[in-house]
Length: 327
Ligand SMILES: [Fe+2]
Image (cartoon, protein in one colour):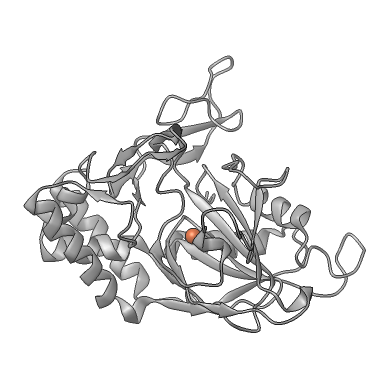
């Protein structure tokens, strides 16, 4: 996009946010059989805010059985697939649906993994340490069981952060669009490289995915040349692109590009996030509730688990390489 197009895109994103209800929960009667109205409501919220809050209904479903998929991994997976999250990020510890159960896991002898503790998690998007061609485009975070207290999630659309920084000075977002803006150092253990260093931009625009039938025999590919997830899907370069943000506010194990422009931009980014406090959506999910999103900025407050299985916080998480389908 040229600079005029970027300015228009920023204006449009701000205007879109000025109306609507980002905190609205969309009721899903049966996650195994998403209704067209439910799907359209989710897609509409995601087109507008890049996230949608939902609630799986309690009680009987259209397909029989009680309390369908209230926190059932199969139901959650079906719901995510119906919203276009086909290619899952299969990281260590996920089940056959690509679902991770995020809960407190004591590791008396191993290194601490903060998501699996009860501590707060600062602003980030998921998978910032992934290779760029395996960027996490969307996530679902579904509450199977809330904590006894705390564990609030806060959401913020990265488009607003970009627009705020661009309005302040376009050079700020340009500095963070540099291919070496943010590097996650290699993960090594006992002399073995478990994950190589990952360098990449914080901000980049990606082509949108289209559902369109290609000519017979043509092999659809995505914008990176990889096979498209399903036959008949291609990535249209003529559609308005989608902003992708790769970021963590943590300061350990992050190397920022060593230039004055980058340093200034990183400070401006933290300030922009703070400035946008009125746009935050705070949610404390009850069992059966969750968020589906285009990997927006999010953070988690610390929490305290109760005694017994049902009183401990469990969030089921799906990460996908596909954005939420809004077509
Ligand atoms: Fe996260």
